[in-house]
Image 1 (cartoon, rainbow, N blue to C red):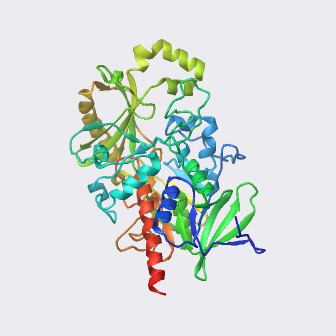
Image 2 (cartoon, rainbow, N blue to C red; image 1 turned 120 degrees about the vertical axis):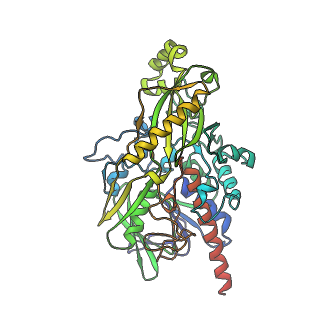
Image 3 (cartoon, one colour; image 1 turned 60 degrees about the vertical axis):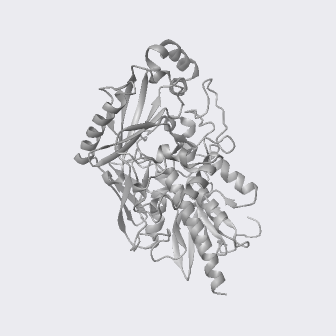
Length: 494
């Protein structure tokens, strides 16, 4: 911790510095936004994080059914450290919802799908900026994720607005420098490996790079229990994950990047009373495809073969197509048996069989989050409007993919349980004229100066796609603008 130490009263004073809570994708983007926006040389960036790793002593869930994995990566036993302790530590209960979050170093980026899906102009209509105004941030975040340049022609294939059904190649966060380089025991291990996420950008690796270059001070093993406002400062109540030892951190500027559910709990706790807010998701479904023409002969990536988008009535949708790869079979059945199955049935079946998902915008979400004392309750349902949207979308998808040589199979079609999309946000949304439990267009929580919602909790809308990239863009914008404005304010008041 350098020259800063916890005093005899168990207080760590970081009030002269920036404090970032969490270590996932949004925290990384926030840190870079602060580094790029602030010229205050005497201000450091302190990252407070539970920081659980694969080597950490596990915190087992109690009295909870095993989660229904939203992707194969959640089924891998060695990955359980990423999400296993989240529900218990947050004192969270669910009704009709499956909450997934992370206390791991690097958060869910340890097992994410690596999708880079920029919002287009209409999808940004409720945000404080347009696509043209923040393309430089799109480029900056893309470089963080991939260590390469994003030009407008590359972005256009994902960004393009269209009312017809289209397929396109996905943008993926493959980063040979800052990705997960863990080459696992599987003979089929390759970039995007289902088992170890090889070469996929990992926030933990970037965090280590920032710490080793003295750009941040990383404080792991600190679980954030609550934040209170006292005498002009924020007091962060923490406990050590490893020992349960409790202490406090004094701060004046906080960027909460704990994940939308945990950030919402902290933000509502500042109000010191019970509250209920909407929790936006991207409702989705899944189905199987069979390639009867040339699609199976393409060079398919482990992560995603193709992406698609379209409209069905009033609802837009977007999805991805994934191969039944040798790597996936080896992950499920072990390297030897998976390779044997692939050898026997590759040409006849597995090369032609694909899994697809489809997501809808948060207009069709139905979840809400209630903060009651120290407990969080999330409830959701699948209503008729969503079922109708899924059926209509499948009809459009069936026709659209037929020209690609893909047949939507009659079995295996299902709506995901609310929460299984793992795309949450909008619980403390940005508003032009914010009220309680909202934040302004700068991400600052209404009534709490210097407390910023720098993860997807502040997003006012979730488009029909993964939101990781756009949440990072939003976090970077909040951090850079707030840091620059505070420096300008300091200059003007001298």
